[in-house]
Amino acid sequence: MSNFKKILLCIVSLLLPTIAFSEPEVWITSNNSKIFYSKEKFQLTKINPKVKVFKLYYQVIQKTPQKDLSKIFNFLKENNIKVAVEIPALSWNANPRGYATEGFSPSFFQDDLISRITSAGGNIDYFSIDEIIWYGHYNKKINLSIEDVAKQSAFNIDKYHSAFPTAKIGLIEPISQIYSMDKFNGLKDFIAIFNQHSKYKLSFIHYDMLWTDNYKFKYQQFINFAKQENLSTGVIFNDNSSSSDSKWMASARSHILSFLKNGNELPDSLIYQSWNKSPNMNFYDNDNSLGSLPSFMKHNITELGAKHVY
Image (cartoon, rainbow, N blue to C red; front, side, top):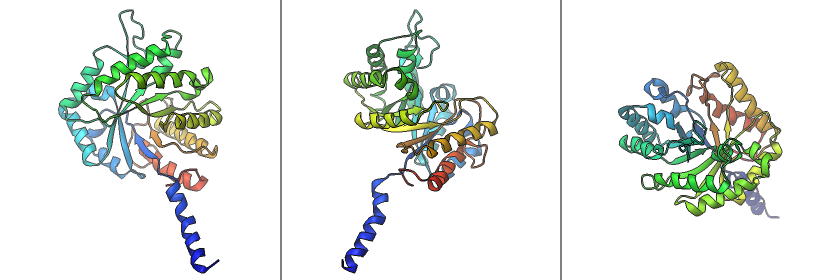
């Protein structure tokens, strides 16, 4: 073999990992509705790897005055950070079936949320539908059929289309529990029915991980399923407790290490999120701040190896 061919092969081999793998997209969510009122907001832009998507809870949008909400949207736009909103997609009725249940809201919810966002000059890039299959179908107290959950959610989600026609729509679900119920048969049916009845088509699915579960096998089934359905994937890294900041963060870091040490393929998106008051600090890069988790993940991907690379 000539020296030229040897050099060419060497260059190709060095380039292959870069060509084959892409950097997972970083999402982050603050549970502090006043986080953008302080200087801490500027730390959001310094997180490494860069935060590509900031996810708002719909409750934050409801509670924030329009003037302040406009500032949030403007800040994110100016810093090239996309906006996601975590939302319910089912409506409770007069029975009241689904009242005060996760994934459900009153019938006027969508119109109200659209009005609040557009009045503040906001644009939404992603709508994350919060666990409607688990709570709407598998919840024995509700027990709607998959068809009813899919058609009702498609109807409600379509209300966003005229205001945000380019938004991407996806699911958040407790994948481990759903797989244990029926090996994703219900999830597969839901996707087909929703896509048939909605102007939007589902484009992503995020795994709300049950960290106490032996999830390695189920996670791989999730990855395989998402590829078959042409959905991008994400995993939510968190701690579900209401413990102190230090304990919450230590637990979240242990989940990251567990995930990587299991040799799991990295998803398309890494979502760092808390549904609780902890941690109080969100964007600073220190041990008690949510903002330290992306760099912790990146460091340990490098140390432990992964099937995606930065």
